[in-house]
Length: 169
Image 1 (spheres, helix red, strand yellow):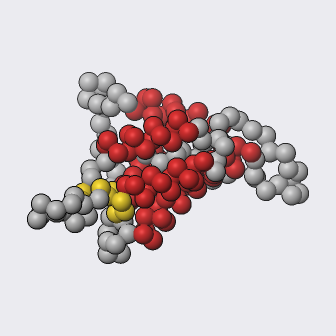
Image 2 (cartoon, rainbow, N blue to C red):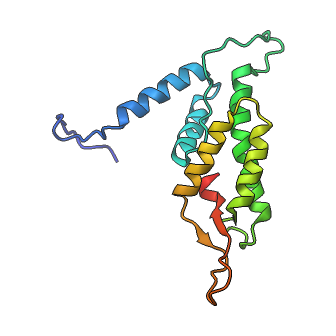
Image 3 (spheres, helix red, strand yellow):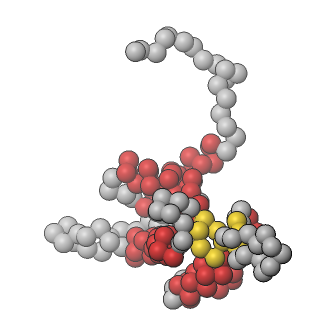
């Protein structure tokens, strides 16, 4: 169905104030990353942005060193992007494996387990400063909606703090 011929003026169109900055950052990221499939990369970019995951973005524009006959498309920047995303992927798998929740549920695990494994894996990566790891875990602990796994109703010992990894990993 064709759109009616309408003339819009600036007063009729509401542009969210954050939209120009989002588009500017997206454009810069696309130029730096130079994705082979811009549409697929864009979908991944905005999905990661909406979930708060690391963005699939290179730190700077790179020229691949491979020749055209053997061009793999791999560059140092691309490998760094994949590595950043692999920590989140590993943590998602951890939550799915260790949860006592039914399949398809929130994949909750004790916060202490999550933070212990996250610290361990981030120490394996020399690019992740310890201060960043601790800051992330502190923010996570403050902001996540904690749910007691088995609330103590008899005045006994408090249940461990758990978090749903589907939202935070």
